[in-house]
Image 1 (tube, rainbow, N blue to C red):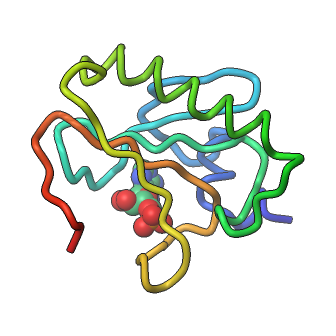
Image 2 (spheres, rainbow, N blue to C red):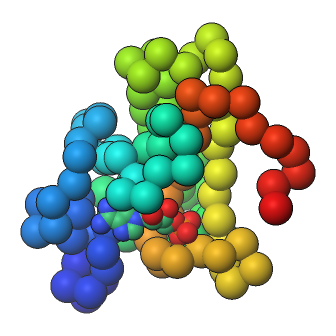
Length: 116
Ligand code: AMP
C-alpha cells in the first residue's frame, strides 16, 4: 500500500510532520523542506498518483483542483503579481526524488531560464 511506504502519503495523513500551506478535500500543500527560493511550496493530490507520466483523463478534475490551489497559495504568499514557476519533475533526468505527484510552486525571486 503506498500509504505505508510513500513519504508524501505519510505527510498527507499526518504521520510525517509538514508545514501546511493549504488543504481541501483533494489537495494538500506544504513548504518544501529544502527551499530553492523564498517561496517553495509542494502541491500534492491526497490520493497516491506516481507522477505526471501516468495521469489520465479521469484525473482532469483533480489537476484543476491542484491549479486552483496554486492560485490561492500564490495570492496568500504574495507572489501572484511578481510571478512564480510551476514544475512537475518526472523521472531520473529531472531528478524526481519522491514518487508521488507534486507540483513545485517556486517564487519570491527572479529565476533564470533554462533551468540547469
Ligand atoms: P522532486 O525532486 O521533484 O521529487 O521533489 C521532491 C521535493 O520534496 C524536494 O524538493 C525535497 O526537498 C522535498 N522534500 C523531501 N522530503 C520532504 C519533507 N519531509 N517535507 C517537505 N519537503 C520534502
